[in-house]
Length: 391
Image 1: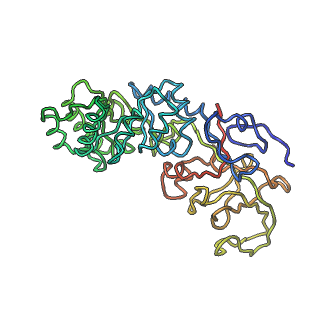
Image 2: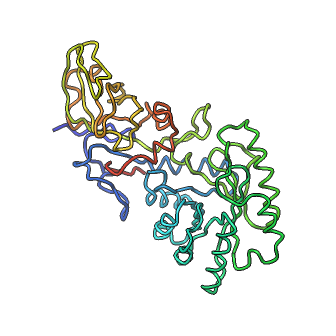
Image 3: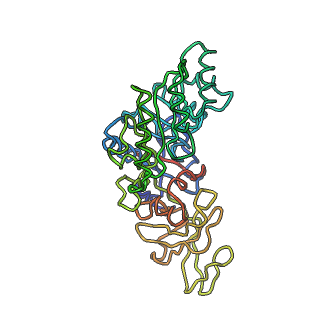
């Protein structure tokens, strides 16, 4: 059996740690460590530090976007950690996410960005959720639900200031503001919009959207405003409002592409070695024999593939104690072959862990290899990992 090694956030370990045995009560820890092919570690201390940085930069209330299971990381532990840091505004995408989060955080303000599907208004009201009202139809349905329940229901009004995705266009907002009693029965808690180009600081759309948002929000005096997303927080005063909405940056994705990442790394992924072996020069490796060994090589097959959310195009590397082990051949559904020749003979054995998302190869690095963005990498991580929580 491999000898146990000290646990670190970079997952250079083969043995269960206290974090493996003490996942937060009531939250899914994923597959048992012995049965899993790979391990996903979430550093909640780094998450908390990222939240504090974003809150301080926002200079206002800072909410957290925890949709898509907190970007694939695990909504329960993430929400609890952020609640401990004083976060009081949480944003989800769908009604089902909101009701699940309500069971975890009974006192938080939970906003549903996609609004409430037709016919689900009572369920949203019973869970005390705050839907983003994105159309006149959603407004009418929410008002009717409040009337049927005999009380005012909380809501947020979303403006489309240039994303052309969700929200009412400017003309509709102005007509709504001028209409007597249009929002009667709705306890308006927030007006919000979403920036389309915040990760490009010099893009003129940022100033255009911020100016339009301020003009439309002025029709609703006294109602808190929310505009800045993760990258928008780094635009400073241009997009500063009452409530920022931190999302990807919380989880370690760089909110300032093209510049150094100011965020701490939150997610670490390591895969187990399934088997090791050797090959001679000229040996074809993997599907299609895309890779032909140009020399005698020592190989290791690791338990990770596109069924785990690793993109088929991301032909990167694994790392063992800081040594780079390039992928050779195609990424398969459940496995990847790596070149273990850089390691001493016998240094890598079945059951050992090699790192694939770590300080040497971040989520953003993997995204670049795959021709995508870090959001897609994180949200694609599957359910076959053993999950552990640090901090």
